[in-house]
Image 1 (cartoon, rainbow, N blue to C red):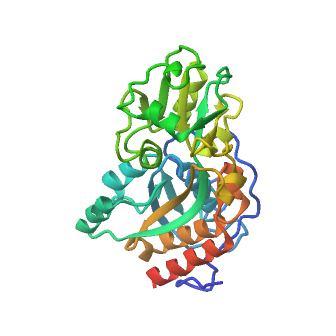
Image 2 (cartoon, rainbow, N blue to C red; image 1 turned 90 degrees about the horizontal axis):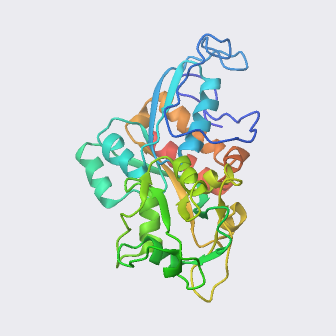
Image 3 (cartoon, rainbow, N blue to C red; image 1 turned 135 degrees about the vertical axis):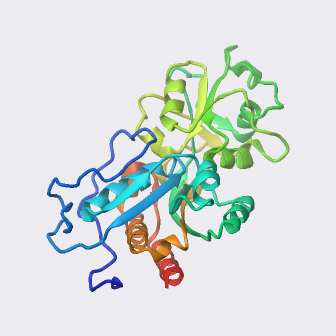
Length: 335
């Protein structure tokens, strides 16, 4: 356990409970509204101990990472009533470009690694991003519940559906035995890290992602579009399927034609058998980590990323080894 620079209180705090998260909140802003309710908001911790920590932590970025950061913020603010942690879903790229790299946020959630161009933009503003891998995801392809013709789909078929060069409009254009029904596509906006990941790993470098779809930064909107249209198809983080498993149907995926169909699940993401498994990240500005409230929040976040709170949301928790590596990096950067 490490000591706080302002006293003997431990920086690392474990949750006393980690109940399952129900329906995921729509992407938006979450902040401390508990002042004056007696639950630690008078400057004391939930255990009645003195807590002098105060300030603000601003988080932007990935809609995929949003529910994790949202849960971490809520739990942290219960412990530290004088700290405001605001969480907004802006997309990984939108968060980097418009908030984090200009120096207007402390932390950016990302469903793919930061790009060279983003690092350059950050550098131009004297922002040094520090990467922490905090969870794993099984990026999920989903269709309408009545789409009984498709249970498994290949990368090549996904490429046909989502490429701008394939000229695919109906399901029968992909497989002859599929119905002559228009494909209704719903997916993340181009500012999304999920869009970037899917474009790079599925659509491929030789083609571009189609613009003939309904883009959004709100994953719940993708779910609703698929649910309400029999020819609907879309993709998003597993947590959003996990909380909407009765509304849409997840499709098994195989990377190669002669490969095995594998369902999106936490177990399959963890063992690497699911071909659309991917890591999730948060990036903290090195300068922000010099502020005690940001340091404390990040340390809390990294500790809890290895607990059931992440699994209950619908993601693969980081391993104990990953947690320790993250905490070691944090201590090295913050000095």
